[in-house]
Length: 330
Length: 286
Image (tube, rainbow over the protein chains, first blue to last red):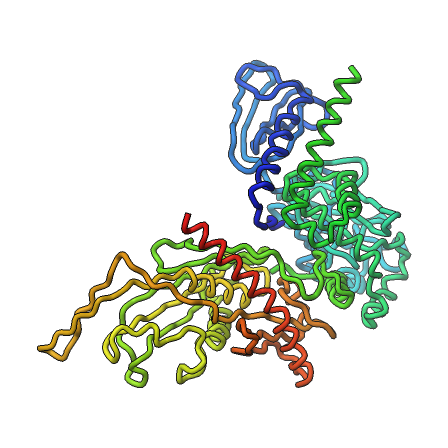
């Protein structure tokens, strides 16, 4: 994802710094430790065992790990800890590369059609492989793949197609094996693909989001590829042929202007949030898009300086309220 | 550049037809422009222009040279563009030759006028030091650092700003009366002549996709173009140059329509650039 570039005037710069500073002080409030020094005990939660501090990732082999806050750009303090027993720590720069796990939902782009498989680019060191046998056939019948099926692979996915799939496992050389057996996986059309750093997308229970109020599908791939597009009904197998006819007589089949406005707003919300380094959750994306709508910000003005600063301020306010509620509840 | 799937291309074409592009711009809106001057201190003038994710740098170097026999009263300007491999992997080694040549020719056509030197954007007579003997040669170099579409417009804007930032040193010429040979030229380190760039034109590229034209296309939108017309317009609304790219033929009425749209859009762009140049001058003075 390319960073946003725009000129910030003096007041905007001041406001932005104030908001980012507030976020910085709020982030460790949840763990009640603003900075960590050697021999400190770091409170942790169950979610994953990574600790992020100012752009560095510390991996602890402990039972609980704390994760939170945003990344403020490269460099920063590194904390090295060597404790007794099972605590071990490595520090490295927060990677933009994806760290895959089995069961992740990812979005990828087909770069090559090889014998009996497709190779997908997924923002990882190696290309992922989607076997023909891991893909539902157009006619829906479960059967052995024949040579004819192999010759017709192009009718399922072509080069440069955007595909949504699930990680099935790792191959012996470290590359990923994907599967797309369910109806909700498969080719993605009628929308746009956005790229954000992979660590901004956390693993949650749900990655497919059908936003009914907008008629938009939003898929947060764990590898940092985000798909925002027109909603497609869970595909019937026969639709594949209809699509090809539809795409040829175009003007009637363009996405409606209302849906397109929502798609563009959500896409711009994702761009602004990723430029700010905030973790992308569906609630945050929707909130940002709705805030832009309610404050009458034009869609392309969402990528401008004013909305960028306002989003940072809004997030600082939201986290401050959250902390206040937590403290109040105690 | 990453490839696009059929569905994404369809989405882009639909957006252009409905006047709502992928980032929310209308067809005739530019991306935010960021201008910096003086990025190369060793050059006489330099500028960096960012148009969204497209980033280009232009530098102007002035050297003393001899005017040509055909035009003893005019200086010389040469424009050359290079594409850095950081912009795209294909620009490594000789991969960027075609694109660089195309960009250089487009800019030369718009800024340097005809073969006789007529109609040039820069007043070449102002570059003369001693008629027939010494003149300033301006070497304008453009570098494409990052490419996301619309390189011609960004380069032309960068050259305009770089020229406004250019200072030509004042020279004192002492003629050696004995030999009719080389005069002694004393280049001053202190005083500089600034260029008047109010008559330097900008280039607006209109990319035709389907039935509509868009301004400031990203590289994804350019992949869908049928043809593109780059129109160079100066502040008075006069056309200084015209370049058409793309293999699809265009009806003459469409060309006239595109030219009038480009004129209309360019006035906004020129006033934007002029205000950026003025702001940069204020910063430089501080």
